Structures are given as structure tokens and as C-alpha cells.
Length: 505
Image (cartoon, rainbow, N blue to C red):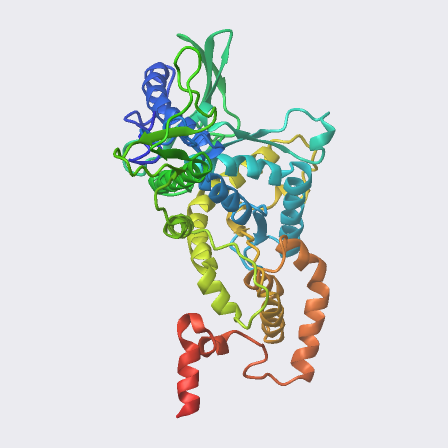
């Protein structure tokens, strides 16, 4: 089991074999599977930890009968936020530009990309598959997707799709990379246990190997690519909360200690001085059935009998402050913004964004997007290859889906923000009125999930508006309302004090 005090991420599995063949598949499989099992132990620990299995590493030696062990489960909180913020909207494909080296008609490209988005969003329900993928990527640092040509044409739930897209359980799938220059992926493996035996299905660029024990069966891989895509959340392949587990454990200890103190105060140890309990017929003292007692005697004639709870002084405010501090620190280190509501106030968009941490969250998401984009583009190429293998009676040879190229497609990540819709609308209007292509203006303003479809549906109106605008209106230096004035109005960046000082002077 992984030592949660030393998070190192999932091992990337390498081999010194540049090409996997029937002669070396068993040797490579045996060595790579042993490394994969180390990853599986780590992954299972993280999955259990996120589910709430977070054993506290301390022993209660004083009043062990009051031993409450509770968890705040910040791991689940962080994971659910990441799954919603980064993965809440599916990746949308958009046309990179009207002019590209393939020299295909831009309207055909637009029609093909729009059809591709429709196929994935509605036919393959890619949003559901992305949430399954996110569950692994965010918890354990890696995830796996399997793409293959469609085989079941009678399944009504996937009608209109031309590729099968499955999210694999990363505990039962992995990829192997060549250890030389480029670290090219040379093998993709998925396996299952059937009747006590492990059945491996191994993919290279050209071959599919089915392996059971020492028996190897071989088939051609029509896709010409390894159909298992490995996603990485970060370069070190760690989960979104993994590095903060020690701090999360500390928070759980604080919460448990506070709960124990609360219970102990309602179950006080009682102190009696210069008193004796009555005895029964056997000479045993008859004591109260609930609680514990400590009896002392001062001796002498001036006895002072008393009974009172035996209490220790404990101020809860520092403990509660430490709990809040730990929570805030965990959120900050995991790049999760503060989730609080405001009853009002005059904070500007920039101030709110900076103080609550949304800006840091967006920066971290941009970093993760660069890594995810590589795997997402590999998946896109596999989808397009699967479409090419569809028979002509299923998909016409002239269909725009067959004519699009992966290099002419941009990946559009949509992450909603809750305060800048008016700014986006004004920005879009300014860009359009200054002659920017409508598709590019929609990408920049980031208002819609499916930019390509919005552009196709709006293209006629945008083109007509631009023709009229150039003929009838003068170009202004600044048409849009923006956030530039917030730099001097935001107390979070000390602009308010600067503005006041200038006004006084």
C-alpha cells in the first residue's frame, strides 16, 4: 500500500523493446504487469481515501472509551469540484480557420466538424464518458480511454455514431512506452479475470495479441494505431488531492479531537471530597451507574464535603480557528476557490476573482489543459480513423464527416465563470464590429459550449452585420465596456487606496 506521507504519482511504464512482436510480447507483458500492480495498489488507496476511508494515525490513551474518529473528507470535496469545473462541459471541436493547407471547402469542413460534435454529444453521450474518465484522472492522476470502429449497428442508444468510445478502469488497463528518444507508446494493455485466469488484450500499431497464460493469438489492428489513450492530469501523474493528504490527515485529527472534547464534557469525570458512598450487603460501594468518580479526603475535623464535575480548562476558539485554517490551506494548495455566498457589497469582478481564488483555479486549469489536450487529440485521430473504416452503406463516401482533418480542428475547453457575461457580450460586439471573423470572436469570448454550431447557425447574420457596419459606421477607439478601470477600484490589489490618495491630493 502507498505510503501517504510520500506521494510520488503513478509510475510510467517503460520497455527497452522498440517494437513489440510475438517473440517478445510475453516478456514485455510480464515485466510491465509487475510495475502496473504497484500503480494499482496506489490507485486503490487513493480511491478508498476519496471515498472516506481515512484512518487516523494516533492513539487515544486518556479515556480510551471516548474515541470518536471523524473525517472532513476534503479529498472528495476537491475531486468533485475538479470534475465539475474542468470536466463539467465536454470538449467541443471547432474549425481552426477558413484558410488551411488541406485546401478543402470551409463550408464542408464546418459541416463535418458540426456533425462530429453532434455524433459525440448526442450519439455517444461523451459527457457521461468524460465524467467516468475524470473520476480516475482526478483521483489517481491517470485515466484510460478505448476507441474502436463501431461493430453493433443495432444498438439504438448509439445510433448515428461511427466509433465505439469506452472509458476503461485504470486498475485494469495501462500503456507501455519505449525508453529511448521520444518515449513512443509501443503497447496498450487491458485485461480481465475469467474463471481465475487473466485474459490480456494487447495492442500495437499493427497487431492485436490475445494472451492467456503462455498462449498467444494474433490479429491485425485495422486502425493502425494503439486504440488505448492514456490521460495524465500532471507531469508527475498525481491525483488532484494526493500531495495534500498529510494536511488532510491533520485536519481529521483536529476534528476528531474537538469532537472527543465535546463528548467528554457531556460525560464528565465527577470529583467527590470527604464523602463516602453507601455499601450493599456484600460491602461493595453503591456508585452512580453513569460517569466516573474520583474521591479524595482532606482528613481532620474540618472536613469540607463537596461533589462537582472534574473539568479541565479548554478554549475552543483556537481549535476552531486551526480547523478553518487547515481547510483554507487545503483549498488553496489544491487550487480550489473559496465557496462562499455574498449578501451584497461593492466588490468588483476582478476583486472577487482574485480574493476568492478563481484566478488561481483558472491558471491551474490552463496548465492541466495542455496535458489533457495531447491525449484528447490522440483520441480525436482514433475517432476519425474509426469513421474512415465505416462501410459506405452506413456512411456515404461523400459525407463531410469523411473529409475533415484532425490538424484543422481546435479543441475548445469550456469553463463557466459566474460574473463576466456582460463583459463577454460587449467584447464579442466589439470584435465583430472591428472585422474579426465570427468564429474566432466566439472562441475568445467563450460564451457557448458548442462554438462551431453557434457560428454555423449565426454566420449569415454576422456576415450581414459586418457588411453594414463597415459601410455605415465609423470605427471607434474603444467600443466595449471592460475591466480596465477595476485595477484602480479593486481593494484586493490595493487600487482603492491608490485612487483615494489621488483624490485627496
